Length: 492
Image (cartoon, rainbow, N blue to C red; front, side, top):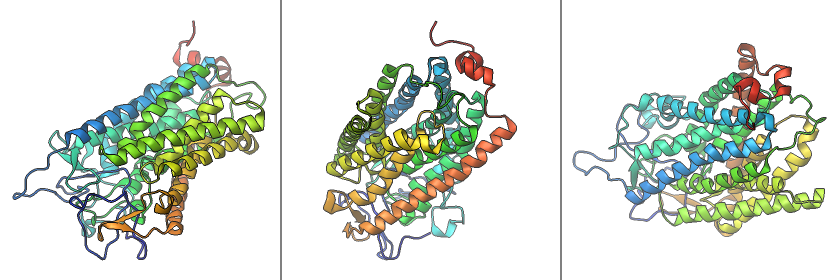
């Protein structure tokens, strides 16, 4: 896997020249997505050792370390309780506990799987081109399964050469991402699927879709080993600052496929299925928004000016999308609803995720406006036409918002539009930006993610249907999953 012979892969804004490590002039710059390179020697370490016997051991930066750990906690808060409350308010009162339990259980299962094998499969690989095999660009190995070789003294390099954080901090931050991605999926099949079927499906999807996509998009050698092999899409120059493809498109497609195969809820399109508590939904949505500052800005793995830019972009893009959805709904339907406003906010958060550190504030506003309007149209107009009961609009918001954000990143990353452009490590300077090529690369990443997640999800949901069965009994669905599945009521 190599970079395009005519275009350097896009990267973050220029590094401090004292920190930048130029590489051989015949190689192109790697893109700076959100992932650090873990700097450890080993059979399948993802970066070359930084220190040798003649050099001092790297010392983590305490400020960067503190920011990454705080960001990890913020991202965990997005799932528990943020996403749980957001989803819980959107379903009918007889199913609220079922959704809360699905989100809670999914988070817990993924946290365990992450430290057992997920981290290793996502973020290890061949250290040199000679060691790389045909699967190296697509999935890692098991050299760090059960956290082998990871301890309080091991470190991960950030996006600046010679700047480190503890590897455990990086593991925790990425664990928070791995937990929220499959939790998003449960909203697509809410109010009708068996609890066991939900858990089985998200586990299969996590192993065969989330981990390969994370590896393809985010795995690389880091600034001190930027000539090392990297993930397939990373090597092509795809930009994804914080997970537009890996998390949102990936989960959105999985939710759409699961909803299609599971079939609609009983009475869908005929009975009123209004949210039972929009106050819960607003509180959950606001927790998502605040947590998203850690989601996006924490992805820089450092506390600096670029981190501040990501926070600013996350704020203004979300505001623009919330207003776009609200005013669009006002024009189309005659009223600006709270549900529309908070849905628009989430659409904006999704849209700016891949672009947060690559575009300027004006570009972020533009992405937010487009994401808000596009998601509104899909949810309000297109959903009823295609006839798929995506209960809580997982694809309509996360899938569509992620697609819009990923492609527009290739537009608004242009320096002429206030973006960061492309940084070439070999030249130690910002390279000429080719918008057409970057949009093509972004579109390639979107297409691969849709196809990959679609195939994995289709196979997984049919496997679960054959072995476990997908739907609860009709009588149980009518009575509500809170009582029939979990034996309790939310309101007594």
